[in-house]
Image 1: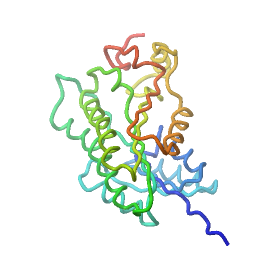
Image 2 (image 1 turned 180 degrees about the vertical axis):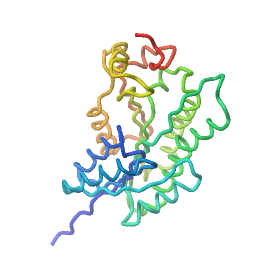
Image 3 (image 1 turned 60 degrees about the horizontal axis):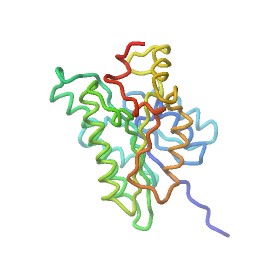
Image 4 (image 1 turned 120 degrees about the horizontal axis):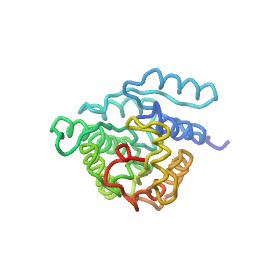
Length: 255
């Protein structure tokens, strides 16, 4: 009798709401055993896990504060109790406003801890826990503003620029056992205090007159998980906004 194939397992950080939650839903539908990471959003994580479990999917919630130096190792230990992971999506992000005149060492360090150090250490931990005869995949969630840059959200932007470099050098460092790629979406959901009307107007400035849609991000995630020859790449989904970059973040542009 042929041996049944084991269910593939993936860790998604920052996955209790917004884009992360949508990725979890799609992965569960695709048959993955999903480890859903959250920090403070316990109720949302529990609700999402229960909803998916009721549909017959395997989703477990694991909590960690990624700003802490030992968080990556603790999170990986918790996520691999029931067996090794085959994939990781570094989606968690700190997004706090500052500018060149208000930037501080404290805020830079806070952003770097969550947006750079945690993904770097989680990628290292994923590689370390994999059996030597297996290969895995990492998807890093960047930001399209890196390709049409402006100085708003100064510390956040610095940390995401470093994260972009991490995507490239980790693809080199962990090959051939890990493929590492990134998705760089523009504004997908209202953020930074945007109203729905402001959110919709911001997309009209794009070359295509629209922004990225959740189904497109999900489709790109599926591509990156399956494309065995792709590594070190970034796929930008922003309706062409990076080809017509504004001088300021869209949250501060007048209609």
